[in-house]
Amino acid sequence: MKNISKTFLFFFIIMLIMAGFLSLFENGQKQIKEVSLGTVAEKMKAGQVERIEIRGNNLKIITKDGQELQSYKEAIESVNEVLANYGLSAEELRLANIVIKTETGLSYWLGVILPFALPLLLIVAFVWFLSRSVQGVNKRAMSFGQSSAKDEKPEDKKKHKVKFIDVAGAKEAKDELEEIVQFLKHPKKFINLGAKIPKGVLLIGPPGCGKTLLARAVAGEAGVPFFYVSGSEFVEMFVGVGASRVRSLFQKAKKNAPCIVFLDELDAVGRRRGAGIGGSHDEREQTLNQILVEMDGFEPNEGIITLAATNRPDVLDPALLRPGRFDRRVVVDLPDLKDREEILKIHTQGKILDGKIDLHTLAARTPGFSGADLANLLNEAAILAAKHNKQQIEMEDVLESIDKVMIGPARKSRMLSEKEKKITAYHEAGHALTAHILPKADPVHKVSIISRGQAGGYTIKLPTEDKHMYSYSEFLDNMAVLLGGYAAEKLIFGELTTGATSDLRQATEIAKQLVTQYGMSKFLGPRTFGEREELIFLGREISEQKDYSEKTQEKIDKEVGDYIQEAYKTSLAILEKNKEKLDQITKALLEKEVLEREDFEKIVGQKPQVKNS
Image (cartoon, rainbow, N blue to C red):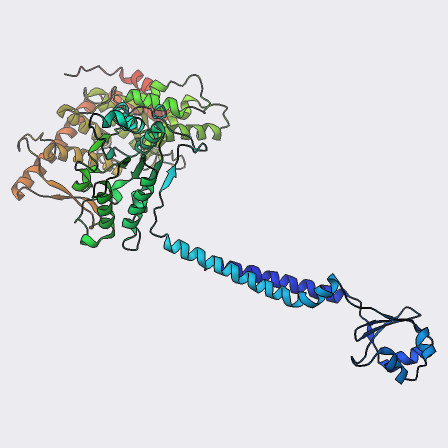
């Protein structure tokens, strides 16, 4: 309807312009005075007429003084007869210089046909454009159930082909996917041995770890067509559209086999069936059913390999994960120290860096960062350097960007009073000093009382190496570090503020996990408490069902409280024993606002190295 309205408006404007042009043309013509035949006869008798031009029944009279007059005669009589009736002699008629002109050629046909043909042509053109618009609407309506998957062909030279060399880290994942590439390149080698390549490969990992990039790299290495679509693009408000689009996607893939079909965010349509209110008629479940049939149904999909990515494998329907469907799972985890350094090397390409930037140091400062986080980090550093009119990105720009990505932008407009600034300084000094003294706590890399995000100040602790498992003693030390700010406020000011709210929440969560999930309870034994279940239709991700009694709940609450109290006593004892150093750290923070590791260790000394048992 929008296109139809535009077409109508277009033709309406054209007609207005033509009407205005014709009116201007008509108004621009010279106005000729009309006279009667009797007046013409009188002027002829008086010898005032120079020439008479006759066009059909129209008479154009030109007098000797240059005046133009116009008159008309009846069609059944000639000019001579009419003027003779007014008493003009044959000699007077001969001297009048009467000229008869006939309309022939282009001007005649234009004068006759154009007034009728032009409106007709405009009407025909309007109807034609109208019908084309309606056909377009019908065509879009008929293709509503067609797949909107975007495809990349190997011969498409406009798009950069991603290869495994473009994906830093994820060595094990690339080794797993290399088998897929080899099958697509040399299928006979596998078929001759009776081997069947997996129909589906599920890429599992946290957001931003490169799952989509790896899928594109598989297609780039194999040189086959690549169809990619997000799971959310299947589901619409109309029932049956998602299933229809799945059929359309796989039909398109069959025509281009061998090829790769990539379903991003599979959990959008692949969640466990029966968990929603809609039952079996739910549109999402119908879409999932069609995916299951297309992957391993009655009709084989030879040469079609389905890749999918999700960061929630725990919510997928079991039918998706059985052999014949997504029977191979590839874990794409967060990069370790070496992988982060390789990722930084890739993302620094095209950026002008200062020679003092050490990528190994940056990789060590960014544990837990995904590939997307590292790319964002360097982009923020480039923006910051350009903002300060620098010619290259310096180390301080990157370090500032690390804090911005981890905690948030600096809130320099948030002015603290002297009292609040002092409380914040002691609070952060309490965290830092406790972390420095406790052997299993990570070393302090930075302490700041500059507000960032929602934090009034912050203390950054970074591990010396990547960790995948945590010990009981590490949890105890981390809880004590979290309560270091709380203990410092209590020790120095004798009262507490709301600044420790987030610390208390994190410490309580750690204590609860020790008792209920990790089997590290002192009194309840090595078991877990509570069954975690996802409730989709209630709008919450996780619901916990109790599998224990109210009496056990009391014991859990008591032990969680005991862990918190023990952590508080530990941090308080450390701060009381090292109060002089606590005051020195606070004084330095009030003067400089930021203490890097070197400045911090000048006050407290180097953290003693603890050997892992």
